[in-house]
Amino acid sequence: MSNAFDPDYRPALVRPSPNFNARRGGRDGEPRKPDILLLHYTAMQSAREAIEWLASEESQVSCHYLVDENGIVTQLVPEAERAWHAGASFWKGETDINSASVGIEIANPGHDFGSPPFPGPQIMAVIRLCRDIIARHGIAPERVLAHSDVAPMRKRDPGEWFPWKTLHEKGVGHWVEPAPVAGGRYFHPGDAGPPVEALQTMLALYGYDCETDGTYGTKTAAAVTAFQRHFRPERVDGIADVSTITTLHRLLSGLPAFS
Image (cartoon, rainbow, N blue to C red):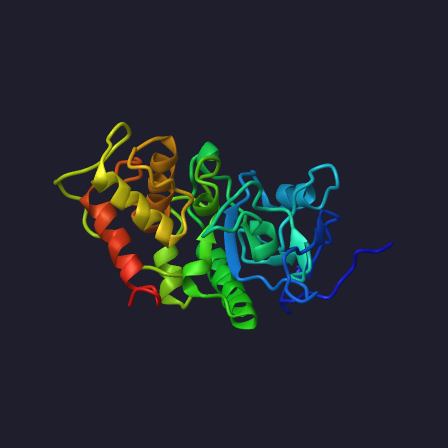
C-alpha cells in the first residue's frame, strides 16, 4: 500500500515515512489537533542522510517536515498523523508530545559536529513553514518549543545558536530580550530552600518538567540549562543566575494567564 499523500504545506516536497500512527487524546471521538510546534536539528552530516534515515522503517523515528540547508522543505508524515520525533518528553503536564505536536527537523550537524550556523535561506524557510503551521492550527507563541525544552535530560537541539530571536521578530515563538549576564546571587546544584523552590515553581509554570521540592538537583539543573539554551543563550551552564531568573520572570509575565 502506498503512503503517498498531498503536502499540508504547499511548497513542500513529499517523501513518505512509514513511521507514524494516529494521534491520541482527541475529544468526543475526534482526532487530536496539534497545539505544539517542536523544532529539532538532525544531528547528521547532510539533509539527504537525515531524510533517508527518517524515511526508513528501521529507524523507528520520523518527523512531519525536514528543512534542508538550502531551504527546501520535505514533508514525511501528514500533519493529521502522529510522527515519532519527540521521544520521552513533557510540557505542562503533557507526556505524549508526539500526539500534541507538529515536528520540524532542521538539517544541522549539531553539537557533536562543531555547532555550525544555520544558513540564512534555511532559517527563512523555517520561518515561512512555521508561520503556515501556526496559522492553520492556531498554535500559541509560547508553545513553539525546542526539543531540549520538552526533553531537557536527554536533548540539546536545536541548540543555543539557533536564532529564536529572529523567529520571534517574524511572528514565530515567544521571546523577551534576555537580561544581561552580570554578577549577583545565583543557585546551583546542591542548593536548597525556599528560593530554590520559587525558581522551580516558575520553571514548572512556564512548562518545564521540574520538581518543586526546594532542592537543586539534576532535574532542576537540566531544566535551567534547557531554558538558557532557548531564552538566555549567552551562557548555558545550568546555574540560575540573576540574568536567568529575571529573563524567566519576564517571560512568565508576558503569558496571557499572568498579564
